Structure formats: structure tokens, C-alpha cells
Amino acid sequence: MGGGRLMVMGCERMAGVREEEFSRYVKEARPGLRRTAFLLSSDWFEADDLVQRALIAIHGRWESLEHRDRITGYARTIMIRMIISDRRSHRWSREALAGVLPEPEPAGDPYVLLSDRLVLMRALTVLGPRQRAAVVLRYWEDRSVEETALVMGSGGSTVRSQTARALSTLRSVLRGE
Image (spheres, helix red, strand yellow):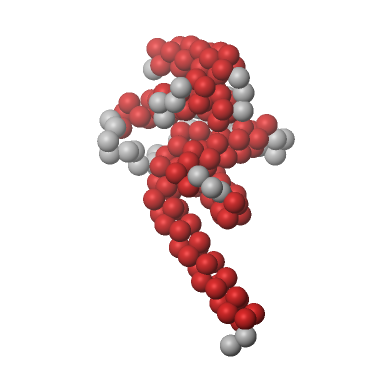
């Protein structure tokens, strides 16, 4: 066999190993990413799309990602930036449905009381994408102000003010429930 043929075979084996590594990562991280995406979007279908888009972005950069232990955080950052960008764009619109929804409500997480979860999910829909991201990162994922600021690409004071406004809004909405 020629040296070129051996090199091609070696590259093919390495590509196969990388694909297996990425597949393993997706199987482990997807459920958690999907839950976070749902908290950000309040829609399971949009959450699935958000996770898929984030994983496609990661797959495109898989070769250059060095800190494999931090990829899930990177994926969350990608999803947060995507949803903020989507909500800003003129393409995005929300329809106001009247009456009963045509499909059943999504199944709840078995580890949390269903009624509390539904009340919280409805309350989160009132928040804007940046406020929702701040609340999810700070309280759902238990991140510090500095970590949240880094993920959101803003300053600590912005995170604190977004969080304070979001909590105030949530308190008033939840008192009404």
C-alpha cells in the first residue's frame, strides 16, 4: 500500500472516533439541554429545535473544542444566544390563542409536583428572553452572577437588574395565581 492510502485510512479511523465521541456526548447531554431549552422557550417543539441547532453548531466546531468537560455550558450559551436572537428578529411572532389549546399540555417532570411546575412555566412566559435567561441560569442552574454574565455576554450589574426585574414580575404574576 502506498503512503497516501495509509494516510487516508488513518484519517477515516480518526473521523470515526470523533463521530463516536460526539454521538456519546449527544446521548448524555441532550436530556438536560432539552429541559433547559424548554425553560427558555416554554414550548417543547421549539426546545427540540433549539437543542438541535445548538448541537449542529457544536458538531461544526467539534474538532476545535478543547475543553470537553465544558461543552454543555457552551451548548447552553449557544441556546441562550439563539433564543434571544430569535426573539429579536422580525420573523418571530407569538399567536394569541383563544379558548382551549388543540393539543394536551406537555407531560411534566416526575420529580416536581405537576401543578407547581405548570404555574411556574406559565409565569416564565411573561418574562422577556433576557430576563428568562437570567432567572434560569441564576436559579435553575444555580450559577453565580459572574457566570451568568459571562454566558449572557453582559455585565454583572445587567444580570442583577434583569434578575431583580424578572423576580418582581414573577412575584406579581404568582400572587395573581
